View 1 (cartoon, rainbow, N blue to C red):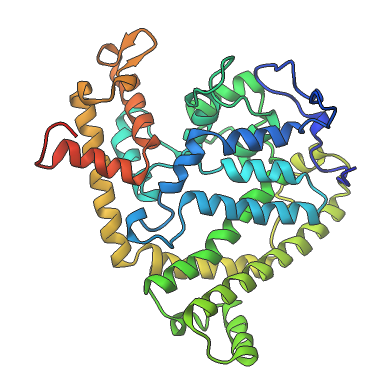
View 2 (cartoon, helix red, strand yellow; view 1 turned 120 degrees about the vertical axis):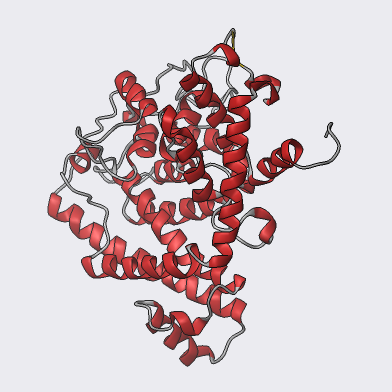
Length: 399
């Protein structure tokens, strides 16, 4: 029997799925217990085509920069591991926290944020582009795997977590069309905070990338240990490592730094969140949603330290000239592909040349652009580079 708190999301109390599935909750022929609704969500995400493609989508470095560096897939797995561990410590539903963590990046373009920026600019006259909305499109319509429905038919709680993992959407905030459509059909209560599990997944994302980016950047030579020795939290950890182990090779030192940073961030979040839950006297998942503020949170001091670390990484890693050169090329690839497909739709693969019974060339410009954005967003880094080479580089015509 799982020891979930009253304020956790409980599978049997799920608000269900958009498309009813008669076998939900039934036992297997062997008599063994069936998977919970959130375990089914997790498994559908793991088996989706969009998740497999994350293996070759950029986190910071394009795939061919080196085999060691993190990709969107390894990042998502790391986020899920951190979220699952913290969820158990807080007696939250670790299956739901894991599902939201694994799904949160499914809508990312090739080449990370550089690809998203380029596609956003190209799509600006046609309704724009946002990776969070694209994730919703992936899990509700773009995955074509199941006989009875498009998308993955995830539970209300997982969809709520994907849509609102960054917090509520106020009425004054522009709600993207795919999210507005889903809300009209499924009532996601956009003005409320999401479940504690979704809040946890969001902060696990911060913990994962703010820690692991040190590892990637040190190994890539974007900065050295001396450049980070005065950063908050990092300084005391490095001093303790030196006192205990002396001078270590970079690979061991980077790993030791990362694992200790994660531990520090996790412990602070658990301590502060436990205090917040106790102060709220939460007795249901809806108490968390309706608290009016994030219940899962870092302490004020730790939140400040994280912002300092984020600022350092922004300047010294994410905007390093070597990364800028890579992202500059990536933006050109995405922009040139989009412009070509818009002007010459017959260069698209056959499966992308129609919407239902209507050829893409007959669609209004806005609808045509959205299909092309879906195609480009679905690409891996490698595939986008190959498509660009096929269409723009001299060489054999048929490749």
